[in-house]
Image (cartoon, rainbow, N blue to C red; front, side):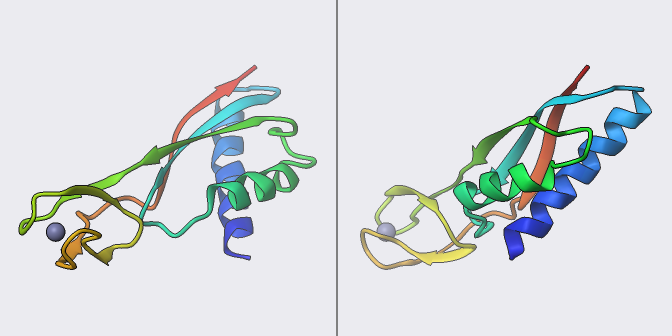
Length: 112
Ligand SMILES: [Zn+2]
């Protein structure tokens, strides 16, 4: 599953930061998620829980911040949030392209 490898990757990043800071436990991991990434937040949260087992992040909380790819249609001026890199305007059908956006980024990590 796509989300599982992403969750494990997040835990890996958090663990390496925690070790650098001699932390014993990770409390919270904040992750920014692009709306065009195709990653399902609920699936990621679900996978995160099992990815944390037997790591410094055991029982850590995952906070997902959605980074919205907002685009204003050049034809009808309607502003909308794209869920794909390229999508059609929901109002007039014009082809819209999202600005380049990071799929996923670990924003902050809270440790003990
Ligand atoms: Zn439009």
